[in-house]
Amino acid sequence: MDRYARGTFALEDRRLMKNADKIEKFEVKALPFDNITIGGFKQLLEGIVTEKDGLKYVEYESLKLRFSPKNQVWEEALHSRDTVTSKVFLSEEFSVQDNENKKIPDAIGYDMLICFALLYGAGKRDSAKAKIFYQVLV
Image (cartoon, rainbow, N blue to C red; front, side, top):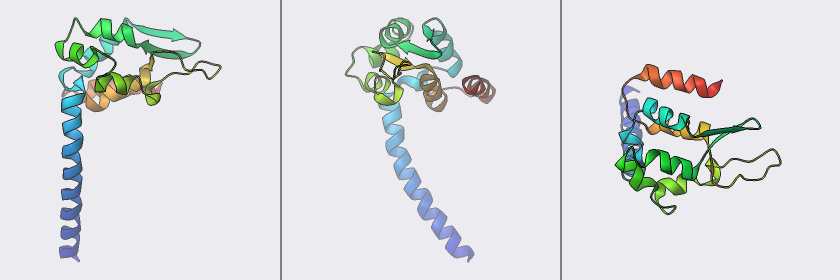
């Protein structure tokens, strides 16, 4: 029984690591979150968040203008709408619908941005990530 369990876990671990490598390559090469802390990211968003009719979002151009002068990696990631980062942010999953269920042009969901930064952002302070996570929940 013990031999079987070790073999099964070893096989599963290898499969997970193989997939993780692909994901890690995507994250490092395509997304700029690895060079900004969650606290820094949230602080930069604070000045450009739009709150309207119970919705909370960031406009793409505001994000681009806010992040580009502060961070060269983000400038490259947002320099056009054809970059992977821009495509992710402007995707349906990050979009925001108004009260009439119409998509708000170029609006990026604030909670989605923060959650993405929580997952992919740099930083070793788990307490900062936990605090921001609970702010998103409330």
